Length: 574
Ligand code: DGT
Ligand code: CA
Ligand code: CA
Ligand code: ZN
Image (cartoon, rainbow, N blue to C red; front, side):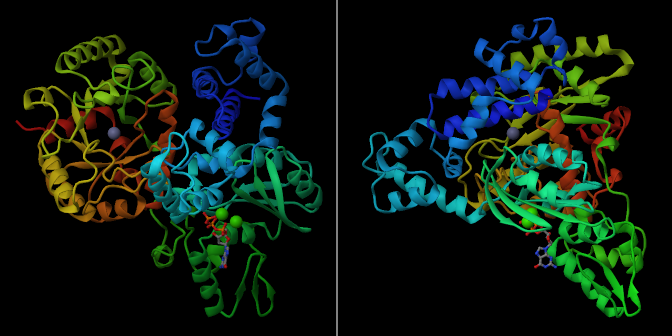
């Protein structure tokens, strides 16, 4: 098993233990070990053979044994047991704000609560308030939390969906009866959140694949099973649908199950207008089937240019594809560098050197540091003295790196309550760029919040606006703000808006990125990385950008480092 997957298993074990209300220290050991593994090579066999794995900080003795077992056998007895014995509803309890392992344990022991429905019932009948360590305030907060969770439904983050579908898709692809397989649905369209997982495979004999699928270790319950389809619930709670079709049907099924439903309906309407019939298995004319070897051929037959999955929402993509080829959407390999990264100077987990190394290893040629500013005490914000020290460290490192790589000095500067910034102008002037973000006073009225952010983006030292709504997907709505007005203000002042690529944020969202593009603005895809692994979140930002129809020209960090330097120089006050 590769290192990344081992880290995922340990993370999942930590989460399952948390849900069961196990000792917080023990749960954290799993998450810490997972974090530690992310810094190691993908293949651990050499480290294991030379007995060096045990020297990894954060990897205790018992954890080491688990990692070795996973790496060498691909299985772990205690992991499988944990999965089998944890009620799926328990993991959902962890999503309720204020509920940690300790409280969940009390709820289970005192009130036999095993899921959100039990919890709602108990809270509504005031049984929760009387428990030790809870009280009426907590009970009200819990109900509020359940309401929010129910309003977002059982959706999961795209990152969670990718983690869960990965091993299953690999397995489907590896089956002898499988010709090819793809993830479809909202995941292929790179939506921010995912309702359920959809996998499609081509085979002339789907039965053994479907049968093996329902017996996978991840599967907690089989919901439906037929000759070409199986639906299961995974141990972590999400549903996964697997469908098998013939190779001839595959392009049609791929198109249909990728969706969206609205896009499908528009496509079907187009076929009908030509006197044809389109469904998930075929395209048929009056004289018989109109075979297609690929999705591109389906679009071609319907008089359309190829439409990338991320655009298939019936937001005008069909009309655009009718007029001719669509612009090439930005890809990860278009990115030349990255901004808004944290280091251990504030709340990041990696050193400046490690972040540089990791950025280079990902094929990028510049890195913009942006540690927190001084008011962000909770996140190790930098005092002015520390800022100067960090500048010196970056200067020294830049000298050492020479022409091969460039580090830009930046800050993620708090926007204070009145819209002013957290450092005086003479300090702001010393940075190459400034990301301005709201991290406090989320409860301001919409009007006051809008004025506050607009004041900040008008500040000539501000280069980029960070996570403009502050939303945390599936956990917290953004603060009240007139985003349209903020986007317009940014457009006027030439301030860029980031697509914060952290999968919990994806902020600015796809819809508003389209608005920004319509105003001719540049967007910048920022990973907000707090570790070297966090740099890979750039992929999620690319997903947002593609859904917003952005090309490489619309994204600032597709520019070379000298172009970036020139743009920063143009933007700053003289
Ligand atoms: P999700 O799972 O809520 O994140 O969103 P999707 O888009 O993955 O939706 P899902 O899993 O219900 O269905 C997968 C695809 O199947 C969907 O994108 C389009 C297609 N589909 C499902 N139901 C219908 C339908 O009633 N009509 C049409 N035309 N297509 C459908
Ligand atoms: Ca789906
Ligand atoms: Ca589905
Ligand atoms: Zn931030």
